[in-house]
Length: 377
Image (spheres, rainbow, N blue to C red):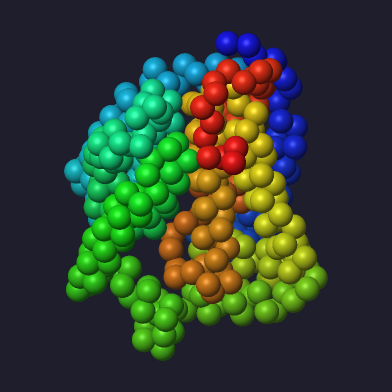
């Protein structure tokens, strides 16, 4: 294989580092009120300190992954998928209630197992398509086999319950299968069936997801559910074009829940304004754009699919989080990548960026395979 060694994608690296720095800055502003509340008035930096401590293992893993040949992940792909499934099962049976069923606790540490599952599924699917690219037009090889391997993981995430993560995961899977050469008509058929099954599950009585959807369509139908969206929009309106000023948010004074996690973008808009919000959206676009450029220059199918899968994962999470805040998507528990408080999301996303940078170093010198993915179209 004829490969030309390149430097890492500096645009991607600089963008991510700037977003993490900005995220720490905004995390402190968005969380200091809540920090005082949970520490009994002793500390304003509880969440900031905790996030900075999470950055230590995150950057260590990031550094290691930038140095290891990403192709070695192909050997681990099926084992990572199996390991993720077993962790999801253990998380469910360890004894939990509500959202705690999404977290694996080991002493003082906790990790959201669906984040690792998302990472593992993308690696497994990229490896599978690389090994079977000549047969991807076949329904059995191109759709049935990979979905049969992935669906147990998706079902365990549904059971947690975490409907939004499951839907994002399946969207990434279908996109990767299509780009990898699977039949569009067959994917559309399976996708329609999947949406139908999801709809039936959501329509079950007592399903909180149904209340969120109904409150999105008609806010008056459930004031408790629509409250967060309403308060987020109030914050954005108060911020206007240039914002109320750093630290001047009103919504973080217990008006808007989860200001340091799911709704931190509302605080950014309130304090920093519409312009800063747009700049942040552009940063996510840069990440997606660079991932596509890396995929186009990658020297093998595995690298191409990894680049697309990781780029989609980060971009879709950002799109949905911002969509919730501005009121165009029903409320979900999706964090804003590199900005929201939380270690498992931060570590997983940095792992993806590290592998993207790793792939960017190995650029195609000549066409190593006549067959090309749809991404090059």
